Amino acid sequence: SLYRRGILQPPAPKEVELSAQLMPCAEAAKPVRVKWKAKGALSVSLYQDNNLVPGNFRPSDECEITIVNNTIFRVVADYGNGETAQKETNVNLNSQVPSVGEGDNPVYVVGGLQPSLWEAKPPTIELDGTVNAVFAGLGDRISDHKIQGIEVLELSVNQVMDYRKLGTAISLLQRWQPQIDQTATIQTGDQFVRLEYQGQMRGFQSFFSTINSLLNSPDAQATVSLKITLEFKPALPANASNISSIKQTLDRNPVERLNLMARVVY
Image (cartoon, rainbow, N blue to C red; front, side):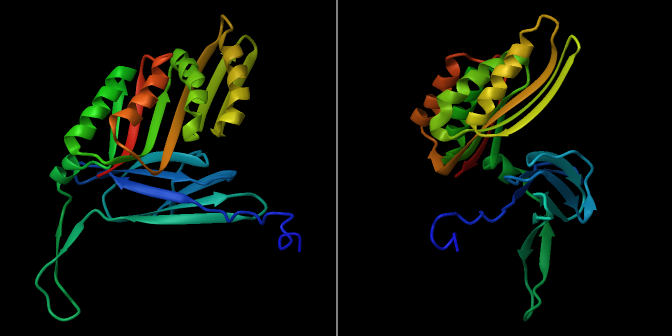
């Protein structure tokens, strides 16, 4: 066949990435951040204990859901032509600690999550403010919590001026192969444009220039968001030089309000 002779590459298997992070909370109802990535999917459905969660979800997306019991989350990705793939994950509200038991049936003492554990080693760090403020805060967290590395860094904005500024910085971050997630809804005169884009920099640049020209219209009304995701494999060492390099890129045309999310390892 053409595959065996090396003329064509066989299609890559469809893979869905899914994570559900239980957030620290003293209440009985616990918030869970569910995130997924289904590259190449046309649509995605999210299920909570086999019940469809309402929403118009994108191939790479996230949402926050409150649960009161142990819960199974499942994502089903539709790739068209009847091809689907799915992934599920379980969220357990209780940490089970083996206690005294007999034989194969040990007794379990079930206890809640300890807030002090979350406070000591939170798996994600979220900061909001100016570029200087969020990176200073990140540096403090790295030092205080003795963080060893950063697996994922997300930088996002939702104001028109900041959208333009962050958009110009993407090409300067190319060494880290940024993934881009943007939405733009623009009304200008008799034109109405709604655009969603998820992908790499090359595809984004053509959209970015078009959106910018529409935003230049004096009567433009717009709602925009732009998120840049940098994934580091292996994890980026959490030293000053690596963080400083990313900050210096953003300092060239700094946004007024930046949301930063870092997934870290200890």
